Length: 490
Ligand SMILES: *Cc1c(COP(=O)(O)O)cnc(C)c1O
Image 1 (cartoon, rainbow, N blue to C red):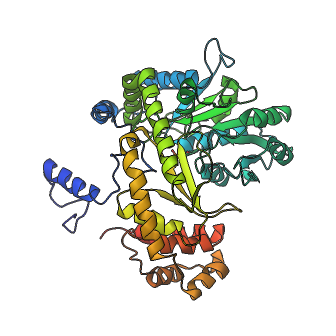
Image 2 (image 1 turned 90 degrees about the vertical axis):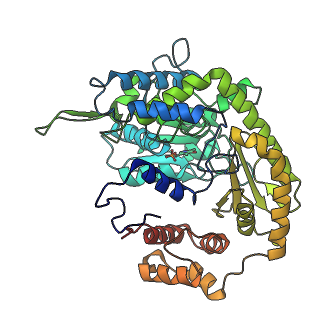
Image 3 (image 1 turned 180 degrees about the horizontal axis):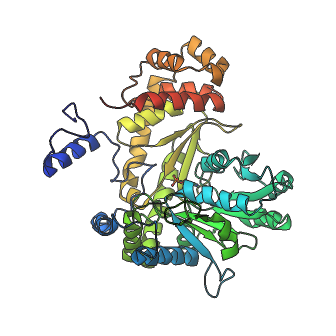
C-alpha cells in the first residue's frame, strides 16, 4: 500500500497522481459509501452530480477559517443561512411559535449534544453537581457529554414493547439538580419517536430545559409529515422544547462534518459561548468546541441544500419511505425474524425469535453478499437486533434485498449459531473491566483468531463474546481492541 518506510512523510515528495492512486488503493478496502447497500455510517441520496457539487463547494472554502466570522463573512453568511433553513424546517422563525430561534453550526451530532448540555449546565452556575435526564434509548453522545462535562446522567427506562420512555418516568427522574431533559426524534437504535410533547411538558413544569435530539430525524420527519405520515409533534411547535439538534451530514445528505444546534431564544444559547480575553493573544470567542475550523463542510452543506431544495428533499423522502416499507416487508416475510419496532421514520430494526437463526451470523452472511447492516447487542432487557439506516439510494436496491436476505437466512441456519468456547463465555461473564489488561485482550483476540493489525472480516464470534459481556466490560474490550488497531504504521 504505502510502499516506503517514510509512510505519510516521504523523503522526497510524491507526484500528485500517484498520491491519489495510493488513496484510491486504500479506499478499495472500505465498505461501499455509494450504491445503497450500506445501512449505517453513510447517507447517500443517489443524486447524480451532487458529490461533484459538494466537492467543488468544499474546495472553495476549505482554507477559510471559522475562527473569526468578521474575517470571513462568507462563512458567517452560509452558517446563518443553514441555521435559518434548519429552524424553519423545525417549527421556528418569523411567524411561528419560536420567532426568536437562534443556532450554531457544529461539526456533528455529538458536538451539538455536548453543547446543548454545556449550555444547560452553565446556565445553572449555582449547582455544584448538575444532572441530565436521558431515556435509555437516547444516543450515546449524551453519556459522552456527561463524561466530558462532569454532568451526571439519570437514565429513564424505555418500555420493552414501544421502546419509548414514559413522561411519568421522566418526571420522576427530574431532581432539583436537573438542568436538561432529553428526548429523541427518533432514537438512532430503533427509529422510534419519543413522546416529545409530554416530556417537554414535564420538563417545563419543573423549569428545566428540554433538548430534542433530532440529529437523525430532523431532516426527514418534516418531509415525511408533508407526505402524509403520522409524525407526532416534536419540534419548536411543542411548548417547552428549548433546543433541537439536526445533523446535516445525515439526511440533508451533506458531506461529513455539519450539524445544527438550535435554541428557542438567544438567552438560552448565551451560556454555550466560550469567551476568553485573559492571555496576550487574540480574544477568543467560540460558539462551538473547535476554534480553527474549516469552511469546507459548511460550504458543502450550503451547496447541497441549495441544490436539492424543498422539492428535492421531498422526492428523496418519498423514495426513502418506500424503501423502508419494502425492506420491512422483506423482513416480515422471513420466519424467525421480527421487526423490533414498526418503522415510523427511516430505520428498519429487526430481531430473531428463533435460536437457530443467529443474528450475528446473519449479519456476516449479509456482508458476504454485499449488504452491510449494523448489529446491536442485547441491552437492558432488549434483545440483540440488526439496524438498517435507510437512505434514498436504497430505493433502487429494495427488490434485490428480499432474495438476498432469504439466501443469507438459509446460510445462517445451515451454519448454526455461534458456539463460544465455554472458557471464553465464562471469561466474558466473569471478567471485571479492571482485570482487563492489554495482555488479556491480546490473548482474547488471538484466541478468537483475530489479527489485531486488521479489521476482522467475520464478526459473529466477536459480537457473541461482546453480547455475553456486561456493558462496562464491552467498553473496556473495545477500547483495548481498537487501541491495538490504532498504532503508528512504522
Ligand atoms: C448520529 C446521531 C448522533 C451523533 O451524531 P454524530 O454526528 O455521529 O456525532 C446523536 N443522536 C442521534 C439520534 C444520532 O442519530
